[in-house]
Length: 194
Image 1: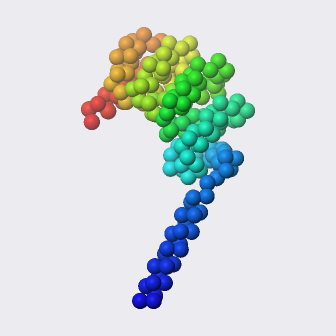
Image 2: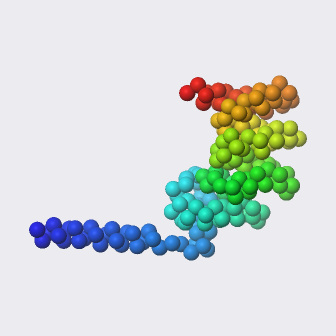
Image 3: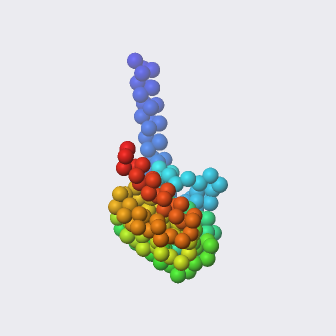
């Protein structure tokens, strides 16, 4: 009986110490540094559970927005921060992602990659609600943006994007963009039949 009581007591102490350790929230500066380290990591993957270990959704979203809009950071870190925003869908993240699509400072090669990532994050986070802001870029002068637009429309998985893609396909001058449009249509049709 005594050993059973001691075992229960030991488990209770272990649980309490674990709860206290988990309850200790990181200071904002520690959160930002930890999140930046995560984004700079060689094997980075977008994973909400990993982000949530660092802080609340609001805190992590604030840090990701900061990284996304900070031109002093490496483009890879900014791109990964944009990708991270897809797991925190809110009005704020939607506005930030849509704003990136029209940012005049994102015209170089790195900027195009950021804009493409913003389209993909919009598509994944907001599905059919993201179709219009994404589709507005199907006539962009840069074929890389148009291809990103096609891929993002496919990533919405929404049949509402199909008429846009169907109308776009015969008029697209670049082969690699037409292939992306065709793949997006196939992806949506595949989703619909399941």
